[in-house]
Amino acid sequence: MYYFIKNRFFSFVFVLFLVFSFVGDFSSVFSSSNLIIKFSSFIYFLGYLTLIFYTFSKFKRIRLDMVIGLYLLIVISINSYFIYELFSILKLQISDPIEVNLFAAKSVSLIALTFLSFVVYLNSDTKQSIIFLLMALCFVFSDVLHYISNYYIYNWSFVLLDRVLHVVGLFFLFNYIIGENRIRKRQIVEERMSSEPSLTLTRQL
Image 1: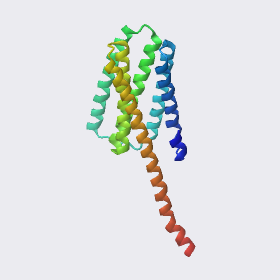
Image 2 (image 1 turned 135 degrees about the vertical axis):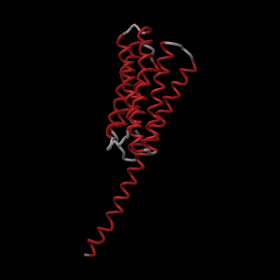
Image 3 (image 1 turned 180 degrees about the vertical axis):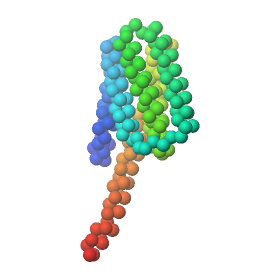
Image 4 (image 1 turned 90 degrees about the vertical axis):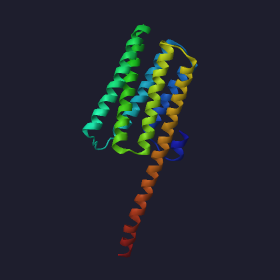
């Protein structure tokens, strides 16, 4: 939050996601209540929705040939099948339908976020798009490991890797925000430099 204020860079989407992420992390770490866990999952889901909304705003004119389109279709199909299999396993392990539905909602939102980030990367092929895609992948694998370690096979290494990936995802997000701020400042400087010659000519006339 201090960074946004210091650099006068207020992105409502990023601020909202960071708030959701903080609330989700805080509630999941300091409480093991079933109700709090559901609340935490719902908050994470809302956070992922904000990132999806932001990704939609980055879409320009998408130009994808048939080969890339087929590749994207294969990737999304494999990911969907994997999530479906994990969902089937969790349905047997979790008796609470609300928790199962929350898992499905989070999984679908993460798949959508990753897919959209990948499309943006293929369309723009910039450092910023790579960072955003890596962030999305970190959140996906972190979420998968969270459910595997909690409902399928508990292993402390899975728990540790889950937390590490989540932190790394936040690290990529902060790097992305910093990069976007630098691009915004560069654009402002370029606009000022381009407007100065016209102002000089106007004064001379």
